[in-house]
Image (tube, rainbow, N blue to C red):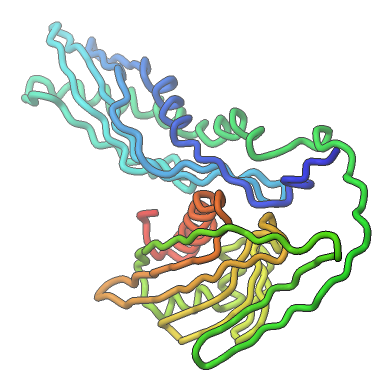
Length: 330
């Protein structure tokens, strides 16, 4: 039998790896030690690890997207035997952070001039070793978690036999002054009527460090969309036009456009029940130095809401911010 959930690894699959990341940093950071001029220091505990850590698979490609803050505890001994403790805070460990860009904030408990000498051990001895741990994070995440999002070809099984031919009814879309009613394309036969899909909704607000005009352009302009989706897209500003992102894994129809203020569209993932679309409304509110994007989505199949929310965050908002510099706080 074939893997009907994700044939040929085509669909958009995501795994939250934050708990794995917390275990990774505990295992590989705790115990790191350094010594210089009789002063010794070592990492003795992980105090905090917060943020987003996602492993994604799209069209057979494994992609890591992460942005975490890390706080480590350290202990040390001065050359005269004085014991010293403190913490090491790293405000950003991200998928697009270069090795030279990591920031380390060193704190010493009960600080005094006598204890300052150990800072050099932490800065020049511990941090280079920690950077090596951070550099291996992405590869380790893929190695230890990829089986949850990617199916090797030899495990796919044989293709499922083709189903008998069915009658396909064309789509009809109506636009009215009081609202929009969309009837999606459905495939049915006299023996198998279309299934009713139980749905739920999702609302969230995201801040972008740009103007409402620039964000509107980014969401509706085909050239910009090809940048943040990292591939060809089908997109038009014509009401009633169809759009496709990520190789067709995301598709829908433009229902309403109010420049710099509002976008309304139908939206679906390829993996959703055939012919089923949700409805997404973007409202842009301009602030003094940023724009708030308020997104409301209805018609999400029950059980898909968490994955849908994560995919908005990873493939839309973070990708847009990273591509155009609309904010560093993903």
